[in-house]
Image (cartoon, rainbow, N blue to C red; front, side, top):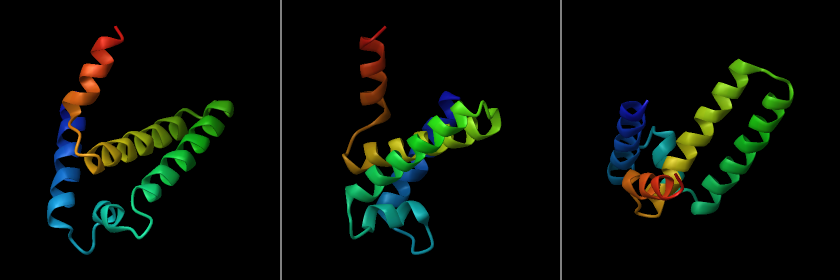
Length: 94
């Protein structure tokens, strides 16, 4: 899983730099709402995850969890953070 997250974060960082017109990720970096667009998506996906968990829907739990991780990584990139920042915080909580 670690490799997958690292690869995804690298793609997000690339989209941030190159801003391809047909990229959803790039659109988040250029959205008129700025960071609020990603924050709204995180809130939306979190609500959907809670509802999926309430319904005990394993497939939907996995889907919504992936959406949350993706949008979280976009938020980190928007704030010029690295995966190492997240890892250090998690390590500190062990």
